[in-house]
Image 1 (cartoon, rainbow, N blue to C red):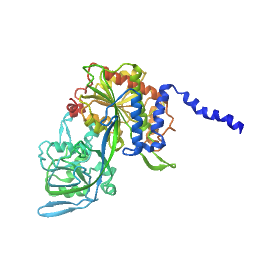
Image 2: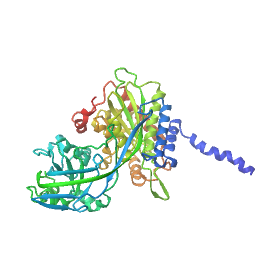
Image 3: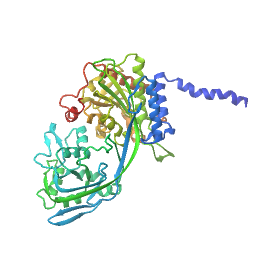
Image 4: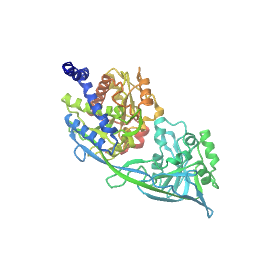
Amino acid sequence: MLRSLLLLPLLVLAPLAQAQQLAPEQAALKAHVQFLAADALRGREAGTHEYDIAAQYVAAQMLGAGLKPAGEEGWLQPVGLVTYRPAARAKWTLMRGGTAIPLQFGIDFVNSGIPTTPDFTAEGQVVFAGYGLVYPEGKRDDYRGLDVRGKIVAIYAGVPEGLPGEVAAHLGDDDQKARLAQARGAKAVIIIESLERRAEFPLEAMAPYYDYERTTWVGHDGKAHIVAPGAPVVGTMGQAGAEKLFAGSRIKWRDVLAAERRGTRMPTGPLVGVLKATASTRVATARSSNVVGMLEGSDPALRNQYVVVSAHLDHVGVGEPEKGDDIYNGALDNAAGVATMLEVARAFEASGKRPRRSILFVAATAEEKGLVGSSYFAAHPGVTGPLVADVNLDMPILTFTMQDLVVLGGERSSLGATYAAAAATEGLKVVPDPSPEEMFFVRSDHYSFVQAGIPAVSIDSGPGGPGAAAQQDFLANHYHKPSDDLSLPIDWAAAAKFTRVNYAAVRALADSDARPSWNKGDFFGAQFGGHGAR
């Protein structure tokens, strides 16, 4: 027993000695990740008690970093969550020449959920608008010559080949297509299954999962937010249904398919007949919060401009077990991003020098449910001055010694040059996205700010040296899996370097005489740049 008692201090001190091997800046980062990715927080799913604990932790750390609360409820900005799904299989009917042509669910169409109108009906003539694209930079307007006011617009899924990747990802989104249709007076949108989409996931295979759940936020008016409430996507029509829809019209369905195969412009115009499309939607509500802290600027002329540093706090919660583990901890996705954000804030405090512009540090909720918290914050930032830039920190893969950085969206605004200069101070280069096919630009919270007209970037480690292999390993074996936890070989020295680069960039953005700006002729700047100029 005496020998055991003598060994006890050694057993207690062993992990302490390991912890002391980390430099203080590295230990601080690990401490945040260790708490946020702990099993006790059960994957921090938005809307759960465990997420709320994580939010309180972040608020406490913001207080310790010298920030001021900037939410509607102290540190917290409440975000009402609306989850919705189709309540039943709908009935659609096509009337032509006095004859009712029934359309069969799961063969001809699948209906969508519409949270703004739980019992939705649209009836009227259908106008086919091809891909439904409006892309002035590419001299393309699929609505040219079409009158869709008060009509149902049928839009072909996807985009044609040849568009820049990020532009294609944006314009190919069904909700963005509905936004363009709404702006031209349409009252509803149906998406037509393309050959490409059918090859990937045919409508018949989609039908059993038609009632998948989606999430959005509740506005101050109490209504659910969707991109195009005046012309919602009521459903998807399969190729069998499309053949019925186009029958008897000047535009032939076979010509549409041929145009997709050849990559040529599709015929567009009104179709013969009247379509009645319905959708019933089941809606549920929950509550979550963004966490918002402010560092006030020192320059009277600039302190009412705000640089945002964002990182999503939520992960996917508890799910299917793998090797007996059902907790999806989210260490790199995105406890690491939140940790970086908190230590950037602490670096400002340690510097003893306030920035000229004010900085808002935002831990966003429900990113994993569709960029919900950041979308709400971009629409309701809670400050009177303009948001001039967003730096987003999402899932930095930090399991190796970094040689370079990827700045998603950096080529679109002045933020790119700022980050190149900041990276150089740590001996790093900024390199292009090595996986453009993943469309990360539209899959992270900075995209919410882009759509609000605010220059924004998302920062990740680059592919140099061991980076490419490490990133491929993480995406293949750990992304959205229980193994994204502290058992990963996280390089805390790399995490500290990543933090220093982001501090340098945010400091430069906050202190620069010039306000961050979109690059001349940039697609997203032209599309949305006017929205953020307040």
